[in-house]
Image (cartoon, rainbow, N blue to C red):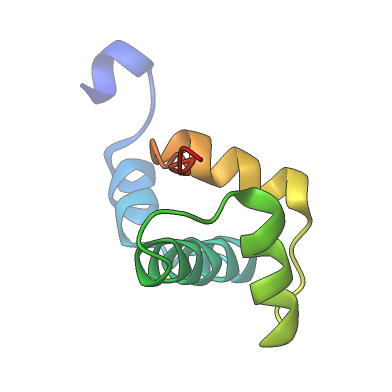
Length: 82
């Protein structure tokens, strides 16, 4: 594979060993919190309500960002029929 991409073996193994960045760790934490809140609400909360819940536990995340994460993880709110 290194030959195909024309890179050194040492670069490949160094890339595999590297630790995640602070931004990646924060994003993973927020994703876990979004999924936890989503299931806690019995799949009823959408991105605006989840963003407010994150704000109450002092995690900064915009509604747009929460919506993107929900879309990536195939999470949709369930609208209750009246």
